[in-house]
Length: 422
Image (cartoon, rainbow, N blue to C red; front, side, top):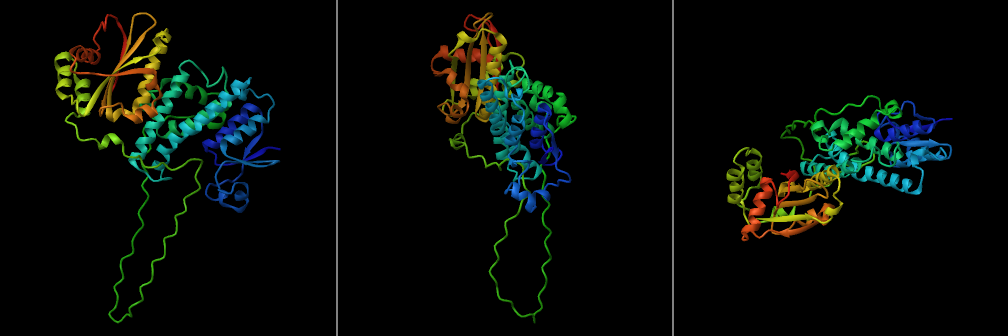
């Protein structure tokens, strides 16, 4: 007798269970004639899940709700299922990536996508925060996938199924090629997964969004023209206005509405004469005579009262024995620094013609200290020694110029690569 899954045919949370069932040889069928917003409001459905969310799995022992719990249940119906790995540490890491897929990937995509679809209030600052958080999560995932085909071990596990299903709405609606190209290993992983036979059987052909889905504007309610009163019409007593009834939203899939982005403390600093975007444009547009144009322009723009310069040196250069791993390490750091893009400019140099490679950087930050929100949110910060630049020291000032310029040799060594954050 098959297990009955209550959900729509294109519900990504239902896909988790259906794909796990395909890998596990478990018979799961979608409930016939299920209609979102109708079926999940019936008395029979609310007895299975009192808050009316989908999916729900009907089993001989009773209903199970929450999509990851359902996928776990189906997976465990098969003894020694390889979807759960072959050891206790495999099991722990599978659970780890399932939690990451829910709290970091799914949360970020949902807070970007759902307001655009009209399911939640659309607030541009909230979207900016959601996209920034999602980029940090994708950066971490991309770094892991640099040297891993799958999340755990050398074959598909339940973690891969959950991660793929949570990535699916992003790739389909908001994460265009120009967005995902920053995360090439995530791209490779996603397209590998959606083309697995058991996954493709459930999802069908997956196509990447060519543009970000536009914001859905709800139609305004028509207003009735005011009726003219006759002079003879008796004056009615003014009644107290009845409180508006709360609007009932359609039952949503798993997820929460984003909160408005709080004001950044750096926005409350006194205005600076340095406009960081002007510097970034000058840097990007200078193709010749870089020292005479861009470097000279930087020092003319630089405001030591509104901004500060910092050198950073990686603490564990002895570990940098493989060039591409070192470059990916720096690339991941820059991706996670995306939250500071409005307030910072940076250059990261990978130095040396042979291992171990040295990683050194220069950063321009708004304010006189490294912003606390960057220290709190970007775990890479603690991997570096940070030294504030004293621009009254001509040697330090020249070092700043050379780092911006990608001067080679730098401090006697060749440059393997130079990366810019702007």
